[in-house]
Image (cartoon, rainbow, N blue to C red; front, side, top):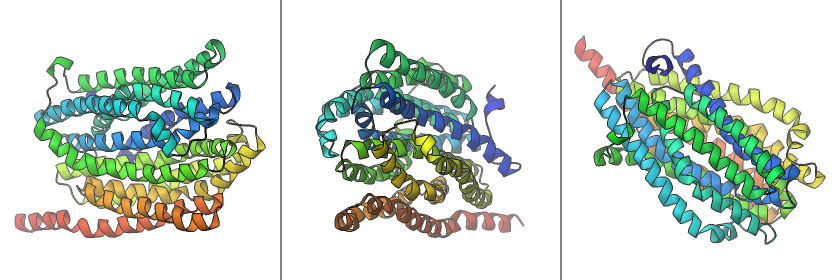
Length: 453
C-alpha cells in the first residue's frame, strides 16, 4: 500500500507524476472549500435572517487561521519530502512524529487564544451589531475544533510530502458527505442554524483527521506510543514553516482589512461578497495544489541532488496552474447567476457578488502563477524570501491601496481591483527571485559533473 500511493518525483517523466500529485490534491482542497460552502448554502437557504452574513463575516478570519497552520505544516512537509527523496528512513520517521505533535499543540494554543479573543476579533473586522452575536457563536465552535483541524492539516502535509495525495482525498470525501448530512440535520431537524453548521464542520473534520493520522502512521509502520518530539527537527521545521506561515497569513491579513471595508457596506453586501469568496475558494484549488506540488517536487529533488529537474518543475507548474484555473473559471463566470444563486436569491446580494466575480475571478490565473513560483522558491529552501515577497506584493500593497485609492474612490470596484494588481506584482518578483536563487544549486551540480569528468 505504501509504494502504491506514494509518488517519487525524482525519476522518470515529470508531467505524469505532477498530475498524479496535483489532481487528487485539487479535489481534496475542493472538498475542504465545500465545507464552508455547504455552511453558507444551508444557512442562506434555510437559516434565519443574517445567518449567512454571520457565517461569511468569519471567512477572512478563518482563512487567516488555516493559512497560518498550513504554512507551519509546510515546514514538516518539506523536511519529510527531503528525507524521503534522500531515502533517510530514520530521519523521516522523526520528522513525521514531530509534525504530528506540533500540529496538536499548535491547534490547542491557537484555539485557546481564539476563544478568548472572539468578540474583539469580530469587532476588529467591523462586523455589524446585527450580525455579531451569531458570528461569535460560529467562531467559538470553530476554535473549539481547531486542534483536530490542525492535526488533519499537519498529517495531510506529511502524507503529501511522500507523494500520497489520493488517500487524504478519500478521507476528506467521506468527511464532506458527513458534513452536508449533518448541516441539514442540525438546521432542518434540530433547528439550530449557525451553531449547527459549525458543529457539522468540526465533527466531520474529526473523522478525516483520525483517518489521515492512521494512514500516515501505518505508512511509516509507527504507533502512537512511539511518537517522540525532536527539538532539532522542530527547529528545522520552524525555519521553513514560520516564513511559510507568515506568507500564508499575509494574504489573510490584507483580506482581513478588505473584509472590514466590505463590512462597511452592510449585511447585504457582506452576504454577496461571502458567496463570491466561497466560489473563489474553488478557483484557488489549482493554485494551492500546484504550489504544494512544486514545493514537494523541488524538495524531493533537492534531497536527491537532482537540481536540474527543478527547472522542469518550474515550467510545468506555471503552465499547469494557468490551464487548470482557466478550466474552472470559464464556466463559473459564464453561469455566474446560477452558481451564486445556490447561495442566495436576493438581488442586492447577487449584484454585489457579480461585481467581485467580474474583477477577481476573471483574473484568478494570476494568483496561480504567483503561488506556483512561490512554491518553487520555497522548495529550493528560500521560504523566508518567498514570505518577504508576499509581504510587500500582497499585504503592504493592498493595505496601502485600501487607505489611499479605495479611501478616495469608495466603491466596491476600486476595492476589488487591488487583487489582480497585487498578483501581477508578486508574480514578477517571485520570478526574478527564482532566477537569482537557483544559480547556487545549479552551480553545485555543474561543478560535481565537471569533477566527475
